[in-house]
Length: 369
Image 1: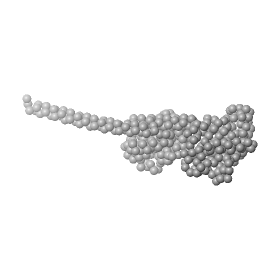
Image 2 (image 1 turned 180 degrees about the vertical axis):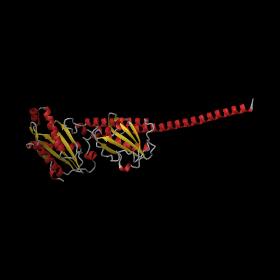
Image 3 (image 1 turned 30 degrees about the vertical axis):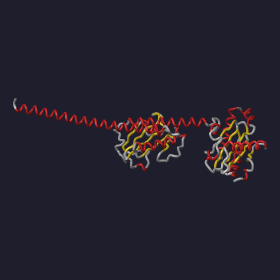
Image 4 (image 1 turned 60 degrees about the vertical axis):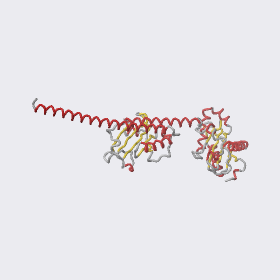
């Protein structure tokens, strides 16, 4: 065989071996990249499973948000985590006061849709001075990229979760967003579930007519000393009231208007007390109000203003008045809840026996404080 032909065959074989070697190298590189992505995904889903386990233990929407903020920052290595929540959505009923402005920003109705964020479940943005994101704050100028996760139904989202990184390539638009879409669904459903659970819990201890607490709310506290409910060394006043001649009012006005009147009395009481002071509908037209951290003199002033305000107001079927009893548990006295209610109830009956439209203190406590 001529030498030239041998050389050609050797050259062809060499090139084929070289091509196979290159293909092998490329395949090895591809397999290594796939394995790396698999390991990364395994770690991500492991963190997601851990996150799901933690959020399921959250006791209320605020606790859930704290858990998400903490877990996402530490477990997913991001520089900022922030919620933008629609104030007009079901989340608007939860003030979430414990979250800072850096963690939570309230947006107005339809603002999420107007931003165009709701058009898809996840947006990946590379940030720059030429490509800013208007919801970010001046102190966020160090961020290089941002992932926006739409929370809730795409047509009616209740919020957006932002994950920000100083790395411009962390959330670049050419990356896959499957994992982030799954994360958005998990977080959205978990937040909806937490709010629904809290609403059910609140309804179970709330009076549907007046919006005050009901007797079920008192059950775990009834035999406790005041210190177990309101803290040690805290003075507590209890105002117990009954609407004068309410049965006659119901016969005259009807059940529906009577319910409006009950609600009006409660609304009047709320004008003179703190929102955190428990108001409990005991039965019918009887209510107990607890005011911790108040002296007897101030309790007397509150009682006087409530009695006068109710008498001055006019319901559709006429005026109403109330009889009120005021009892006081000194800081060192630490009466049980049940005992304090009984004292206030007795004082209320004294006020009613004296003609109603007045309040009376239990014993000589009007002189205390």
